Length: 480
Image (cartoon, rainbow, N blue to C red; front, side, top):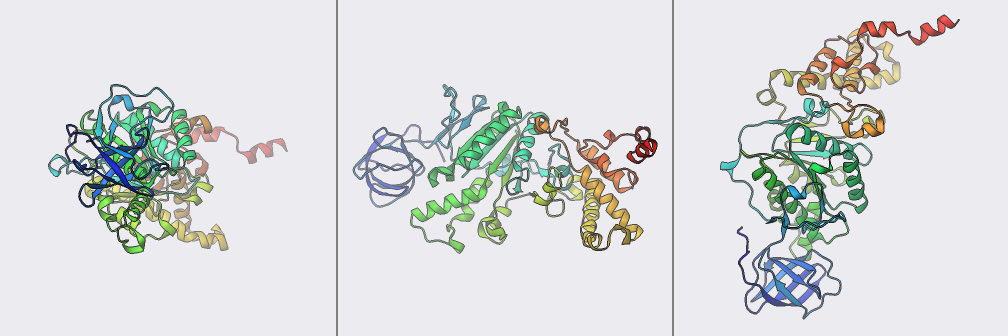
């Protein structure tokens, strides 16, 4: 859609206010769709035109609270759509849906602004080959490799390490790809936004991060459009700065929810389970703007809430159609101290095929999964009868699986100040080599704890070093 910069401004009058839906009559010229209107005594109430009704009547969704707005109040047609700032100046800042800074720092001046409604990259501009986006996190790169320019879903409840994983991904993106990270909070609690801002600041990655929020207490129109504002910023870094962008969205379900509220306010007929009839189109408009081109890639990791754990819910099924990987965080693994708490059996990626990742990576990943799946099946027998009742082959499977679980843990750079452990960024080759050596029973007689929170497998103490250290039993014997 072309920007309406040169359009004449004209005045209208409010004719109806129904919650966040505002009708305005313009006698001279009706505003275009997506036009930005300003109303209220200080012209601080922003409305976006979504439809035309009758002669000269424009219906819009208010992106600010409509408290105090009355019939007969004047409305100004700005002749333009909502625009957000783009460029290097926005790095390290926090914005709302209008592109206004909300971090209590100096406001931005002399910065380029772009309209939030932009078409997705044409097929001719897209890169058709599949590339892996390496994160430096063993559990993800090995079992659920991300697609460069693709979309990955991050499933996890409170307290399982979702924010920590997000901050580490931001840190590694900046380090490995010289890229930028954009965090988009859709329907976030104000508390969560403030905590995440401090976490990213403490982790030292704020200078290469942009944060934009449409918070839970804001009108549905603001929550619905904030994703498009974030994508406009991301597209600048991809197309103009020629950088890779990591776009983190929390939460896609809140985007769907906001669209449902807007649809209901506009009086549209609800579809299945009460969702808006345009659900599929709205999700596609947002998701299709996330892509890779010859100049760079926007890789997205999206938190996805599944209502009542019902994966057949329309909001979930329409979102899954766009995802190239799903990373599921397990509360059970988190309670065992196995961080990152990625569930290796429930997580998946369409990139994990021999043609994309190579024969070796595919076979190692499948063998790791098979070993962990067999261990999961043996857990009930172990709980009832004990490890001694298993056959020799099953004991070897358990031995390998427990060592693999611990090897797939990793100290993060962004948690050094809390754990006291030096963070590790692990290359895929090192992750594959380590798993191969564990699967070949090279560490069969080593303690499980030796493989816990390692980077490369080569960091494990050599056998001779271990022999020099007296075992606890030996120390007791010497004392006696």
